[in-house]
Image 1 (cartoon, rainbow, N blue to C red):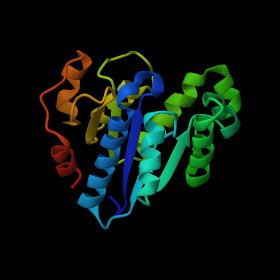
Image 2: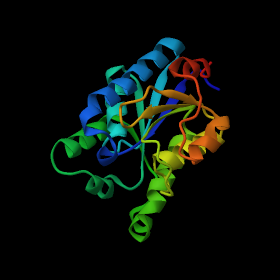
Image 3: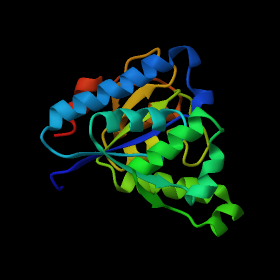
Image 4: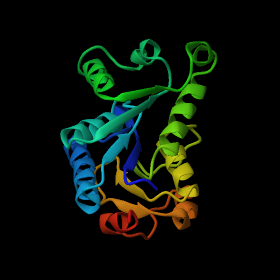
Length: 204
């Protein structure tokens, strides 16, 4: 591994985040990044995410505020992907983050128009390929959705990446997940696992 360290992020969009606890979720993400930085300093740090509205945007803003590099694997060319963002603050955040990030376009328009799942899957896999660890902002409910927070988190665990699960409801403390936790997660159970300290220890 090179001296640089990259943290991937997967997480829900706003409709699956607890609207009453958005500040808590954002604070959990920000605190995790700050603790990663303290643990790994002076190594250069990168955040890798698709800058989707919701958890991705929270993480990208926090990382940039800390001076991290931002890599954004996006599922489609920017003009196509921009349709995912409502006019107003969400679109403004997207434009700002696109300007700050090193952008990787994962699927050409012609394929995206045929099946947009291809783009989201390609972006998710590209993020994992560029990450040394993962922060997953997940609501605890397993789904069949390809390239969603659960699917991406499970792929990361299967690859042996250290994962920090941040509760998308903002109600439970973060958990450090490893491959051994995959079975209970598949059953929708909250596994017996360490907290943020255990995740940080796995980064060494």
